[in-house]
Length: 344
Image 1: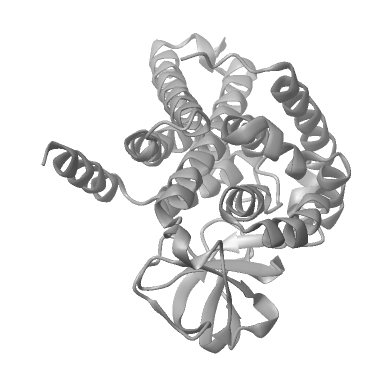
Image 2: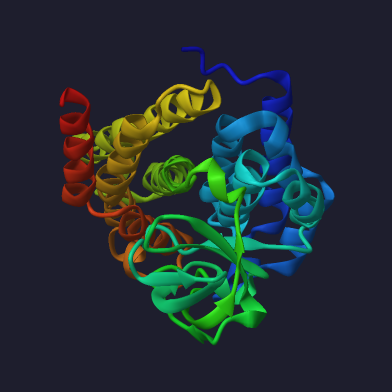
């Protein structure tokens, strides 16, 4: 395994880092509320970053999402890239790729995913019925990728849905409840090619684990900066052993999230079996991610309790990603089932 970024991946990461740093400031995030920062999204698409994922692969996307997570930037970058760009590029028909990818590259089309939610939506004659309790970034999406009870994936135009009902989550992700009632849908890929559900779900787990790595890195960076200047008994907090140990544990957890996400993305891009690695990355992102964002807030002392402080946003995103990826026991159960199936 070689996780060294290619020149293209490194250039894309540096460009994304500059754009997120310039436009995803605390003041702009506060003004955005739960909505998408339209100016930031326009800048990312004008720079060609969503389309670049087709060339840089899932590992390249993970690198970009780390930069987004550091700033908790209010854009549906992860969702539209993994459920839109990568899903259509890998599994769409030639006609679907030609029709859908241009809009996904320039940002005029935004796809989110109602995954994992098998069994809640039924398909009959190209129409879907059912409901998904909450879908991230749905309020600003043009399409949503929905699995049916057979785990086939369908693209639904949000304007055709029976209802898109706003839902407030822990993190401000423009989420909504999706209601379908005989809603017309387009199957992703040819009907005889098999369901790409497992492949898309693995990619999503890896991508959002990469996003969590960035969220944790940003939280820890803020804690290090704060404890280096905040004094107690005439000494910076960072000189106290208890603070150092808490920060060191958070650093190791963050690195564990990053390296497992990198390994899973590398396996995915190389065409190797990545299902187990994706579950492992998701478990670290869920379990360790919780610990890191709690530590980041705790190390800010009373300041961390300020709901308007930037570190609190990392806390909210970290807890939301924990919920979205699935709790640790759920992910371990899935990994155990996978290992048992392989042994059999």
